[in-house]
Image (cartoon, rainbow, N blue to C red; front, side, top):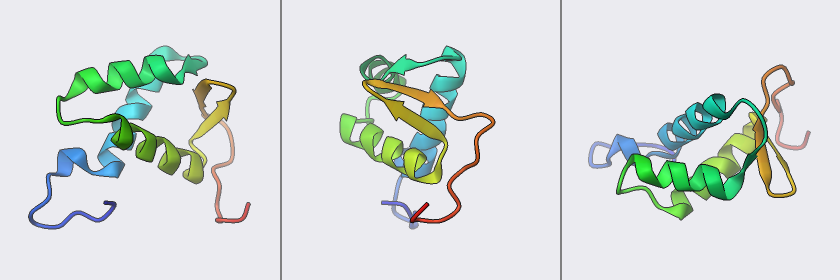
Amino acid sequence: MLYPNENSDLKTNTFVIGAEVISLLIRKKKFSIIEDVMKQFLKIDKRYSPDMFLEALTLLYALGYIEVEDYTIKLVKNGNPQTTLFD
């Protein structure tokens, strides 16, 4: 769910989870194996699940904030974020 409503827990919102993933990647400062980042992510809050992590990765990739190569992810710092859906 991307849009929160009055009954939802904001901590489990995809945008908030994406911010958590970005903060984990900032600490790594280079390519990170997806599984290692997911293990760290799941330790943050017991309500988090692997599905939430993958949804956040999909959002970050679609927005152009991460790059995926083989089994690693990297935060794009000086790149051009994707501005259109069909870029």
